[in-house]
Length: 118
Image 1: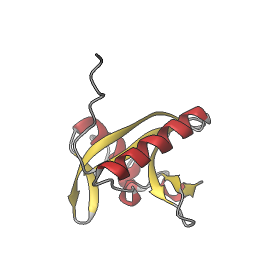
Image 2 (image 1 turned 30 degrees about the horizontal axis):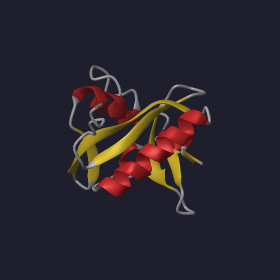
Image 3 (image 1 turned 30 degrees about the vertical axis):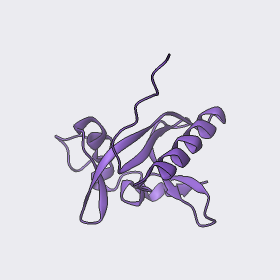
Image 4 (image 1 turned 90 degrees about the vertical axis):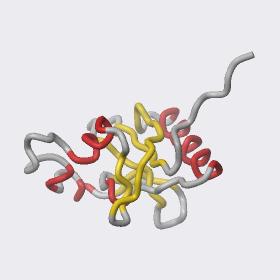
């Protein structure tokens, strides 16, 4: 009997890489209530219960099948000043940019203006 796949602890956000440019994107609730992607980690939709996490996983599977993103997975986060912050340094780097150059990456606002896409 196969064991059930292990899910990250909640709360969690969905993180992926855009298939066209490779930039890190985050699942967000779109204006019409459907899930979409944003490049701004502060806007990431936070799943705090199992149904919400399952919804994010289903969205990830559909987006991967539609060849819009790759490497989509849930990331456990803590809430700091009202924003989700990944608990692990690997994902934290993905939300910020290079640690030795705070003037580059998402921490400097690079790429965030590209906005949200459905």
